Image (cartoon, rainbow, N blue to C red; front, top):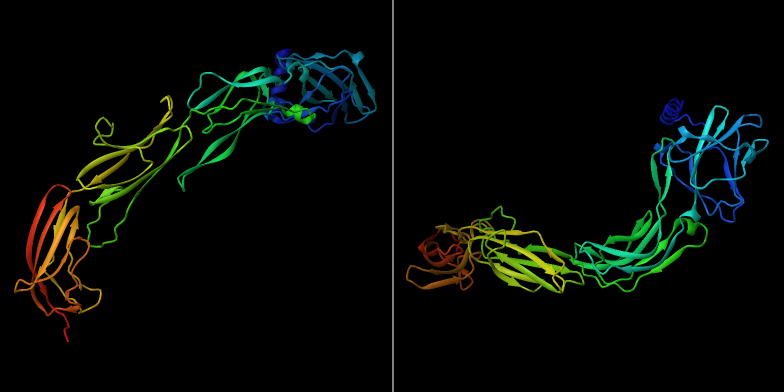
Amino acid sequence: MSLLRNIFILISVCLGTFAGRGAELSFTGSAFPAVSVGAEASTGLDGVYVLNGLTGVSATFTASSASSAVSWQQWGNRGAAYAEDVDPALISRDGRRVTLSRLSADTGYTVTDGNRSYYFWVADYTAHPFDITALTPAPEQDCDRTILETTGSAPRMIYYSVTARSYTIDRGITVSYTTLQPDEENVTFTQSAATASLPYVDGTLNVEAPLCDTYFTLTGDRFLRAWGMEQEISSERFMTQAVDAIVKVEQKKRESDNEIKTEEALGGSAPADITFTAAVTDAAIFTQWQMATDPDFTDIFYQSPDTELTYTFTEMGTTYVRFTCANATGTCDYFSDTYTVYIGESRLQCPNAFSPGASEGVNDEWRVSYKSIVEFECYIFNRWGQKLFEFHDPSQGWDGKQGGKVVPAGVYYYVIKARGADGRDYKLSGDINIIKSNVK
């Protein structure tokens, strides 16, 4: 019979045929109102109620009619299939109102109204009181989680479904403290409030480690809050050991259209000016940007303690860069992602003709095409060997003028000395043909 009854209950839950859902149930005889806890749909329960003591408390069910047959049963952790009839002497009726005069702690009840049943669970708060008097950070701490020890507890409260599955009643205990919130866009940390919610507390608890010194405040619980008796316990000042960082990497862009561009995310054509910026949390005492020739950082060739660093990459090859920080004792540390900077081989090519003054913006300046040139000097001469112009930046060029006036069409000469990021030396010379100058 128990098996058949259990199957019937399971079918009823699955089909949602508990017509008793929404039925009126009330509790009297207590100075504190019953707190209704939402039961999960899979439990088959119509309600879970927490009462502050059961002495003198009665439960009244409002039946569908004054003539409908109403019966009460109670059950425990074996589920509603093992329900037993309630002592009839404890039940009284006044029209539609059917009252059970004495309730048992941590017990499930089934009220049957005709062929419809209403299932609910009653928990006695006084059997599981919030009884925490002190909150103390543990002597040993983790870098990611902070462990707090309590004097006293707010133990787990359990209810059972109609099919005997256990569920935790969430006590709504909160731990609040101050931490640091990352602002990625502005590369900084700002103070913010943090809150952790706990269903119960039994001896110790842990929360995400704060990133600044703070006090922890334990507040509880939801039932005491509903009854106007909420408690608040604060810890002594906690000195954080956890560290975190925000990093940002930006390369200075050059707008010169005669420089050969690459697809590299960082680096490309030398010299590459890259700014590395980091912001760290309060406990980070040791800070360092590291550069290495290998991704495992076994060959670190450059280190800087500055949180903001601008570095110019002038040599061909791959450099791996990361940021690290640690607390004073080195017990907690942080390592950023690794950034790969690649500088390609050098190139330098020179055109042999241009037409200054012929058509503005079209081939009216003599400029080299280059990549990864770290040293550069160029001199322009006329056919008599007279120097007309010089420049030392490969992104610049000659506009075909001397003394502010465009020189006549003809043949001119350039001499270039340069060095690439790959160590290659360039010694170039050749003709420059001005094919049209529109000299007046």
